[in-house]
Amino acid sequence: MGLQSISASELERFSYCPLSWWLGRQEEFTSEALENGEARHGEVAKGLNEIVSTERSARDWEMLVLVFSVVATALAIVGVSLMIPMDSTTVSYILGAIAIIWIGAAAFLLFRSLRIEERRRTTRYEQGVAIAAIVGMVVALNAVSLLQDNFTLGVVVEVIALLWLIGASFALNRSLKFAKVADNKRKEQAVEGTILYVDGENSRLLRSEKYGLTGRPDYILEVGDELVPVELKTGRKPRGPLFSHVIQVSAYCMLVEDAMNRKVSHGILRYGDVEHEIDLDDDMRDLVIGKLAEMREESRTGDVHRNHQREGKCRSCSRRDKCPERLA
Image (cartoon, rainbow, N blue to C red; front, side):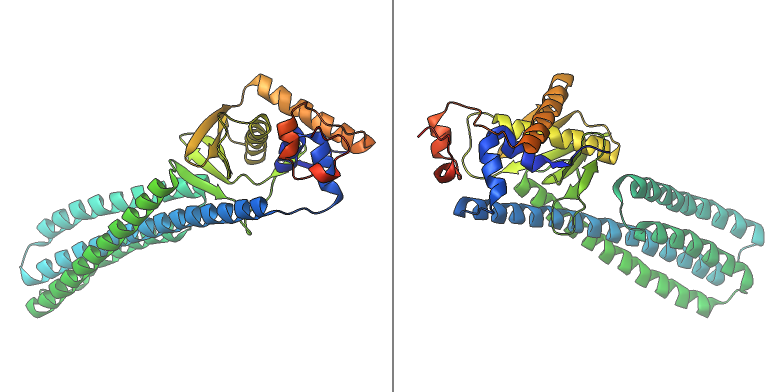
């Protein structure tokens, strides 16, 4: 039998005050602060998804630049070959050299897209575009051997090549436009690294059988070879990271590391524009595991009590009115 599953957000509430967490389980609770927090999280998620979509669009248009350029080059070569008589050996050398360059470039981008597909789950569109570039170049170059010298046909092909170059310029313009939009949105959200995951209605729930943890971080960044879960807190900005929030971010680090089988050495806790880096070391792992064990035990026995002596904390608690152990 596996461990009882506990969400990282529940663990945060338990770490804040076990009794407050326990009372919160008895009935659904909402407040203006919670509603504002949820609205703010929704805005952040929308902004992050816009970054992801615009960067994907920029990559798609970038790949179209390749296709248009490859086809335009191939058509231009075919047109010149038809317009200017050349012996077959010279034509073969010229076409062969250019073909190797373009096919090599397309093959490199295909390889790169396959790597990205594995690591970042991008669409297969980029792979299809790179394959089309290779096939288009091969077909266009071989067409020369099937045609006789024909000046008129050569002129037509050159015009078509020019149109394809115009298409390449348009695609480049669109790519740069989307890239600029994505860059501006990144600055607005203060986000660095590749956005790998964003919490939302359709985001998958992460699970760790090893720790009995579940959860959805606000978002996950890919920085180098590591994943970095990020938790955003709305409302007041404390002088330093709160203990319960540190526990939650550390739990997300352990959850992401186990569920996604990737290295995680730290997470980020954000209070508005203020960031705190939370390291995941052995002591922090033991602390999170200990809190999970406490939570499971108190959930089983129902013997739950307040864990602090701070009157101010009690006054700000949303379950204060129904708490039998409140201090103020």
